[in-house]
Length: 198
Length: 198
DNA sequence: CGTCGTATCCTCCGAACGGGTGACGCCGGG
DNA sequence: CCCGGCGTCACCCGTTCGGAGGATACGACG
Picture 1: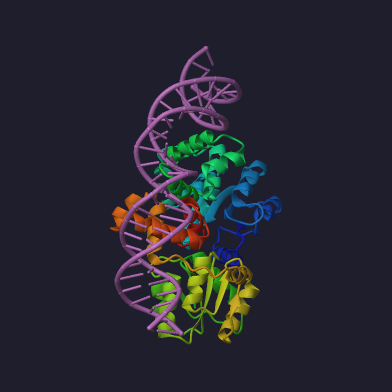
Picture 2: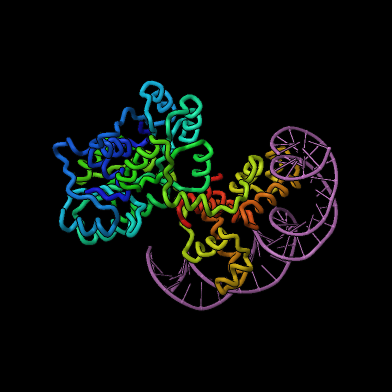
């Protein structure tokens, strides 16, 4: 089954599996909700899933799919390989993570490998998973503060918004800086945006 | 002619024009340089061009293409509709700007319209063009300063890097704030990233 | 020729920031 | 049961920002 909100990509993928004997495209969905409904009726062995979609997005769809149909293998096929996307997909339990610039042979191989119970990772994704010094992400409260910083709020203003003291705001930010490996609010928001945290 | 670095998308687009009588895909390129070479030999009437590609990117390819083959109409087909992307494409002189979630009928219509000398804009792109209070973008030098801010540099540090005085750095930033409509370095980098300026 | 944008530089100053150190209650995992 | 992460708060202190005023020089554009 193919899940992607772009008609162009769906057509491209279907075409890529058109003349492949051992792979058949049994359904296409343009968002997570459709994917769940179609998975029930079409019973695919493998799902090729985009992550960023309107409505129910890829990660949410994967979680629900694995809850209701744990036997279906999900291979993520997306344009992005940001830390946050990769981490969330991994946590949701996918069998593979490929980028959309993958050649058709790689897609064929990925679907077969996934169907056989194996795992497939794009090189850049694999390296992204490695090169992480296991620093924990900022806590929900810390991210809340960081989001206000990204909007240009001063500490005093953030304190008023969140109904906490300015000291607490500074403490949160201090921890955020440490976790993101920066030492200024500007750099912090940049790193957070690049990692998809805010 | 189709220009996109993703095999999936190229296949999808070709498939979409497969059974269309009055449109023929005469060439495919995976980056700007290929596009220029193929334009010479294949002589397409219309080029469907992605913007973000390795090597020579879309905007660069469009500029050179319009210099050497001004009769070829270029329709941008991309995933993003950020201000900067749209503005640069418009400045380069395109006949259309569509997003990749466009249905096939819209693509057909766009190619025909472009071939006939008309212009096509995705709704969100059109509205993006409207909702601009005509504030000039930061100058190259100002962006240079802003990029260093995004890396977490302090003004004094930026001054050393760019071999100018700290006062000048502050002046540049003051102008950047005014142009981006913010009043802090953190908010400035966020806006700049969202607009694709840095 | 004037004026606009760019780029460079200056001073003064209050507010904001970032680091250091320390503290408390809560909760959950080892 | 104790330790670690979370969320909250406090004081101190030096540095940095950002605003408000300028100023000069140069090139472009009408």
